[in-house]
Length: 552
Image (cartoon, rainbow, N blue to C red; front, side, top):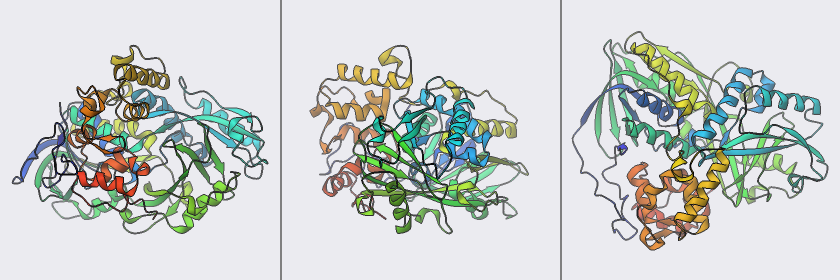
């Protein structure tokens, strides 16, 4: 089943830089009059929570419509630190329930999509001025045992004078601790949930805003407006507000009962987390967790082969979440804290890219943004047609949140249906057709890469690995019947061929250059301005600010 997309009618996606059709591309439908759809559930918001809920509901047989004002994962869900983790630092805030829930999800997620998620070992250099060694050991003991582990190894102490992770650090850091968590390509995680939802019958509209939603005792009537001028009327039995940083403003300004009363009962604290990307600071494959004098932590993580990702900050913001960007103080803070540990200082002039995500945290009256809970709350309103609002959450617990949300929707509709996602693969994550029986997710992926190289020896090694990471077993949909690089069509930019771009437009809702360069992939980080311009030309678009790789 192909994803159901609301494709912008004026896009040039599917055409090459000279206007030629990409291999296998199809002409887009002309503009059509307003459509109407009937659904069981309308979901507003195409981030990880919205797409995760759409997937779960569709898999239980409900008719689902999802709308997203921008691209999938345009905001918070593509701007995380990209970790599947329990949240070691949350133990200090006694968030044991949240940490346990997140720890239990790590291995569930790693098994579901080994191509976009994998185990990662973290090194914590010990600084006695921050936390005593006994406290760190106790925290890591809890971290190891709060939830069952099958894939991830436990923690241990290390001598940084002998361990490879000690080489990039200042000589005063002689001992440390190593523990396990996981890494995820966050934007692709969102897309895979959207793909699974669509393949199970959901209808997804991207670059389409919900401009009004009125409820009565029988259901919701919502008006959707596409950026291309299209309009759609959706009648749904229930509505899910998964608008992330806009969840509160959606209830206050758009979703209203017929009487015109406001529906918002909760307040969000919008906390900006900024990250910087610099040329790689170390050669090994471990990540670092650094303790700062302000009692916060930052991570330094291997990123995209050639870089190190450093983040994050916690800065409370006011105003429009979409305009959030890193400021000079945040950049200086991240550089300063990383430089406390690395022998070679990290300077603002080293930054090649940066991004900021706004975390929609439930206001719990905490004075310190770092102490605000990362747990989620599902708020059900059944005064008329069911309304479920999603408050807070973190990427690691998205599947459990979606499962709880689907259970709650079933309760409100009077139609409880069985859960199913805990043992299910995400699209591309089932590698058994390539490698036989599953063993361990990270090793299974390496077996998959080896089999891909055997079946397609004409693929250069780096390209084969990148495509394997991005698409897993769905790589067949990208390569088609190609038996050579030439059969993938024009090389639009280094390593990006027409066949892949056509696939992204056809099946993954890519409509603008940024969708490909900065969300479906991070190729924008590796390309020159001219190379990014070639990709933009394939869409008939001018290079964006992100494509020019400007640091905000």
